[in-house]
Length: 327
Ligand SMILES: Nc1ncnc2c1ncn2[C@@H]1O[C@H](COP(=O)(O)OP(=O)(O)OP(=O)(O)O)[C@@H](O)[C@H]1O
Image (cartoon, rainbow, N blue to C red):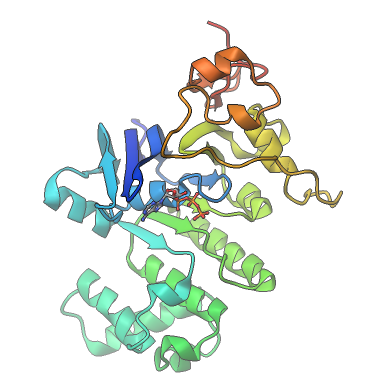
């Protein structure tokens, strides 16, 4: 049987027009996600993770963004022309960083949820919509769902608002969910609950997921495949657990070491320095300035993703990574 993709993105470049000039954030990025696959996208702030997710969802504002790609296909729908872009928007479901900005503060939760249902399942009875809304809130383990339906967003806690957003994204009946730091605005104690919930629902309903999160323990647990992003490029991608166990790219090694160890050994050193300017990005490797393995080659030539030895689906973009298949 032919493998089914929910995402095919080829040769994406994104720049932002700003007063000073053009920020060349993403120079050329490829990404695929298979049906039912759970994928993690990690990298420090400003690497371009939100830019990628918004491009995939076809909701990135142009201008200031200038987007080009050879192909963007989401759940079999090509983002070509206005109608194609609209189709892609309808197809994916996105969960945003801050649930308070995703919900309309002036409308009750019941109105916002029923609007989605009315567009998904037009012409049904009021009682049917009510039943579906309650079921969706129960599915996200919402306490007192009737009361929540009758509330305005401001009357709910941050965790409850994010549960509503997750319920709404699942209502959309989309097979592909994009979650952009869904717990950033929440308490750490709530973070784990929400990520566990997302994990359970995505698995139960066999949805595909791209999860952007700084909670690397959760990314390790939830996802099967990992994309590591640095300054607009995917620098390493492979099976999540193996990649966590033996990262090959110096940036991935630093990034994983910079977070609290999963084994509780404390916090290791971070990576010194900052992301290079997107106004005048270096012509060679964008990580070279911060890299302990830097050589002249790195300054001259940007590395491309190359396979890691005998590890299917594992690629690294570094001239000096260990275990690369030599041509
Ligand atoms: N609307 C915009 N206008 C101008 N520049 C932008 C805009 N959005 C993003 N950028 C630029 O693109 C870069 C990548 O931003 P993006 O939000 O995609 O990164 P990120 O990895 O998701 O970061 P964060 O974790 O902080 O959300 C930023 O550093 C910024 O320079």
